[in-house]
Image 1: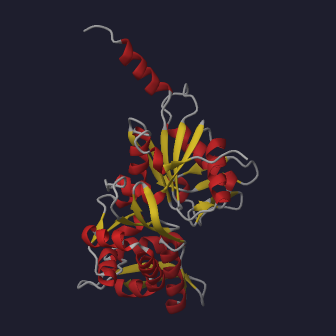
Image 2: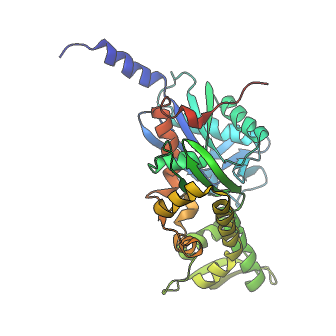
Image 3: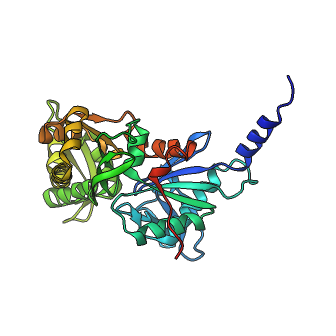
Length: 351
């Protein structure tokens, strides 16, 4: 077998320069590396030493520290409602993640595609770009989450036909009708998984005088939460602090109660779906009747949420195979063929 100089340089390039696609979510960050696929899937949490401002832990390790840290360590979720709440911490988090995935220390600064909610402002977009650049990126490209999700689940976004997608994340719910590589109508609301967790915390506090943490609320939602009545009602033991006596206490909660607790955030999502459908041009609405609604994002894993939307809209609803990875898969596809998808990428001009 002869030596192929073309392949040599191709391999060399893949060693030195790996472009990266990032889905920087409120709850979870996923990173896709050109040619390697998804290499990181960790919670968007960072723990820092308050005195030295040094990073103690990121991702899964930092998430386990939430609500359990001593005075000198702070565990933070630096993203809120899909946007950056703490610029410094996001930079620290991204830098740690990018260092974690770089196999060699010889890397040049990568090009990065990052997914952002469709409803964010120019200022918020700049904050994302600046954070990613500060974390070590050479060039930063932005792509709307609903478009990335649609590409990730293989919808024909470039055709003149309507595709409707609902992406329920941790901080935002994105609802968009896409045609010809653009968003025709969209609705981005800051009601999603986090609001459901918060609603569970408030429900248990009000009905049982028990205080629980966000992580416990999330566990309840995942274990027994549902959006639509099912034949089988599940129960779960929940531990927390008694509001009256101040001592630890255990209660039992049913899936029916969890459904009651998350009723409000769910009805806000349904309302946003309805208003997006109302704004959709008739030709595209006709396409949606045939193709139905597609669902992505971690919030789509809530049991019965597809049934609830189907009942409310009378349209077929399909949940993506791996809904929580749809956005990063889409960003990865854009990364692999940037020429093909140039219409969906946007860069921000320097001031």
